[in-house]
Image (tube, rainbow, N blue to C red; front, side):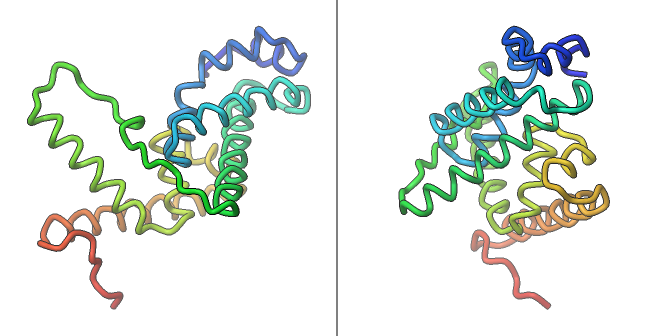
Length: 194
């Protein structure tokens, strides 16, 4: 559990200190997820703030303990990011592709290791763009946000089996895309469907 049940009781009672404790426990994971979704650190930070404001205002409606609050937060973040992306698309704005905000660098690694890590992250991002939106969401929530399959099922309002299937298919497709790109001299021109 990321935070004790007493904190969950405080959130449901509208206690700002309890919401602060939840923030300390989950903000990094939520921010990582939001940055992966919107690709703009400033927008992700704004969405994170909006999500925690919602928790403060609507926490009294959450049934269940700490696990329910965690799932509620990621579901709220998912919909906040979706709304943001819809607004950006409607206004036809270009989002800044600030990929560096997602990168955690090992300061003990040498320049060659940094270059290899950066190249791999870029290839994975490019391959992820070829997945279905549902597969991409499941993989982001599972690996970036660190949610369990049942938690992702609640966030995306899908069955546990559907989440596991999307994750499996997404992982297989990602592996094939990365293998094809590695074996090919042309990056990401996936083979025609057979």
